[in-house]
Length: 467
Image: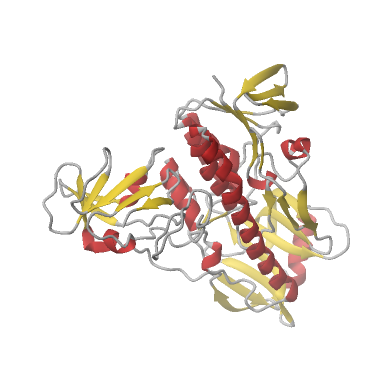
């Protein structure tokens, strides 16, 4: 039986489909396009997204296909004048195993997610637009080409031009900035070192230039250049002429595989839910590419929504919109502020701070987060920590959280509910179901005294703590 219908097979829809399928929820995912998207577009994966991908079982494939950030060579007036990192790389810590972003073209990320979804017996249905739907108190009737189906829930993950959002009459509040346009494309560049990204600009205007970033697994670079008021064709000839203006020539572009002219569309849906119909990803919020937030925020929407749809309780379903809409608004503000720095030519426009890594996303004060005191509170991201089992095998807390179930941690020798994971101080005698806190990191991260219990939501956030 199909219980959830997902319209849209981008990263958001695929993440949600995987999360539902692994919980045994009957799911169909339909895509109106006749072919899968080919292009880099959203190529930056933030640390919190890597944690989600680990839980979904796709992280190894993503890391094998992608690459870590590379330094950017600065070319001014045809001369290399230095290099810089957009974000300072940091070392993993016991509580943050993936502190740095990662790069993989969006179409390849989608391919990894589709392969994982297929392991659950679910395939994306291409060339299958959602033609209409109506809902009542018990479910949603959806019209697809040649069939009408009945489902418990419908999720619109169908992009910024979302049919689902428009059919619901939900306002998409925000702006399209017609004063800014970008020429984007994936292209090969003969004469450029692929160990670096490259920034080309004039010495008198160093912050207004062209960026070329190597794409992992393919011989292409992602090309990005600002445009003026004139109308241009997103063609190889146009990309080459723009580059020649700033590089002085000597670099030959060829094999353009994807290109577009992009305008900043900064919008947030008035609501993320209407009864049994939900919005997620670009259908609910669209971002400028500055800061690499759009794809990642959509993945977080799906990760938040999956376990709630599977449960089906009113309390959980009601929590989706207040938890996710507030975070989407915050992230939109971050990416918009970075965009303004580019427009102003600010020296730090290329810099990326902690607020872009999405590790600080949380739900404090939300409907599932009772008030509490302390550094770690309900609604916070649950930290990782190294452990050791009774056989001496190294284990991480994230491994205990992995899977569709919630987790209860009990620290020390206090009473424990059935199925809880007990964490004992280093040097303790362990039973087959206990874990030793290596280095004391788990006790420290969870501010745990003997007997403290911590309940962890299936999406890796703290739901409750006892003293």
